[in-house]
Length: 298
Image 1 (cartoon, rainbow, N blue to C red):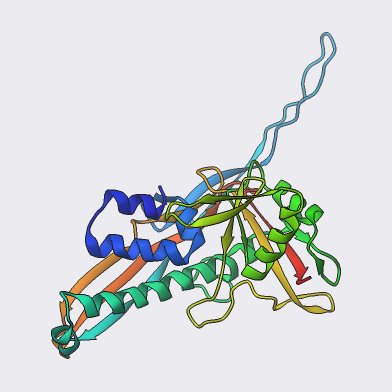
Image 2: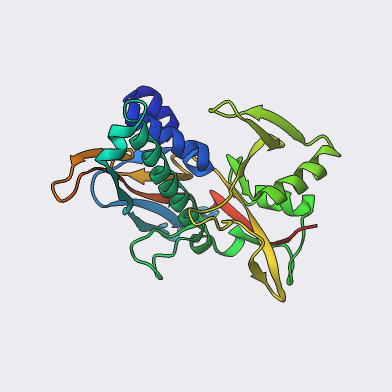
């Protein structure tokens, strides 16, 4: 189940409030289901090669052939932080827990945006503490180029991106400027529809696939900005198509987001909250996600 659905079944005020903030700032967290696992990694098998099949004649035998299966593992990573709020600020607040609630919300929003950035840009080779993101995982036919030196978006590109995903994508992830461009293109042919998401917000859909808008990270830097290099162009961006599900892309976790009130510290007059999430992303099917890179703004 997604974090939002889990919150509905776990009405603890502090915990559910955190999950709600996560979903409203992180389209991946809003739509992506999570699976609780035991241990420090999610281990699974993926087909590499199917066994051979052939026609045979009378009294002839088959040549033995066995398929090849690869065992893969996605280790869980620890994402979180501590937050201290001075006891005096709490005493001066106008309502019960108001000050801590505001600061907790800011901490969780930063955690949420850090998670979102890692989903795209995470690289465990460069930083072993984080999980690999889509830019590291997607290779070969799952990466579509808009042109040697980039190119403006076309319906053919968008359709190639959607078709690169096995089944129907759950989400098209892009920045706001590219959403504006897709809107303008899709309106002209009646391919744009509008629906409401789980939080009651209106979302655009391209032939039934909703848009997920990715904005800034915790430092205020655009996550999917026009800052990628494609050949001689250094002003391109990417659009992603993902299909969520048990046989697609999902999150693996030890448990849902942990929010722990550690109480007042002995070392100083402040109350500490710790937010942690032991998690990773899993792309169980090799074609559950795809990337269109090198897109220029028209």
